[in-house]
Image (cartoon, rainbow, N blue to C red):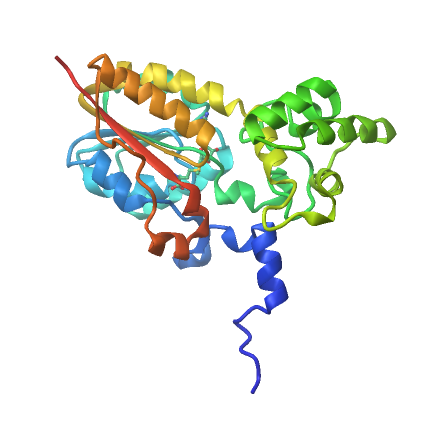
Length: 328
Ligand SMILES: C[S@@+](CC[C@H](N)C(=O)[O-])C[C@H]1O[C@@H](n2cnc3c(N)ncnc32)[C@H](O)[C@@H]1O
């Protein structure tokens, strides 16, 4: 019997698992444009509970997957303000919101730590809901020229905002050995941090390391042949991405700012994808709840259902926490 062309061979399935290829969350939408598949949409809507006429702020609009769902609940009298550091994805979000027939939205390109400026420009004082969906969009991850992925060779870039100067290659080629080791250990929890940092310093003396492929090959050599399942480059790529985009600093700064831009009934929801981010969110929400500034909507992080993870494996590490302002 002929093999069905739709079913990948065992080898391809193994490679896909190893290189995360099957875990992309681009979905083919009507009109054949490629979209990022939003994670935990039902849970986000449940905890943020947008209602008609409210004003929401989607700080990581990306391709607009969550934004479209939120806008549908805000109705014609609601307002949605969106932000993203990536100009390219905002173009997609704009088209999706327009196609969905939502008119009351404003999208801004920029770092969410500057959201007060965006709100001022949109003539919005406070918002009833804030969403942060951290991490990378599939539209960034799956384009080798953006340099986020080791699955395909590309320039070692990793900038979410291409207006920014510093790239991952700048860090890899100019940071000292100790600094590289710290980055890999702290942001990647990489057990071979020292070995990889040493190998980078040695290798860049021959020629600058400028491609994802060369760095991934170096990580593989550092691990030797014994690695299983998780590709040896996974953790150092995560660490470099966090560093290039100052992800943890931005998150902390935004969480400090959030209560000032929330209405009295304001809700905030954060989806994080690794424990470093989740810990920051957990500590911020808990200490504000302790001070009486917030009421926790989630005591433990909500996780995606097995059905969602099966349909969209990228959702597997998502953790959702939410809180509401509590005005005494
Ligand atoms: C996981 S994606 C969001 C996907 C989006 N919720 C959707 O449904 O399409 C994360 C997005 O956050 C953006 N981002 C990350 N850090 C940011 C920051 N500090 N300021 C603004 N946008 C940021 C990234 O550029 C990326 O597009």
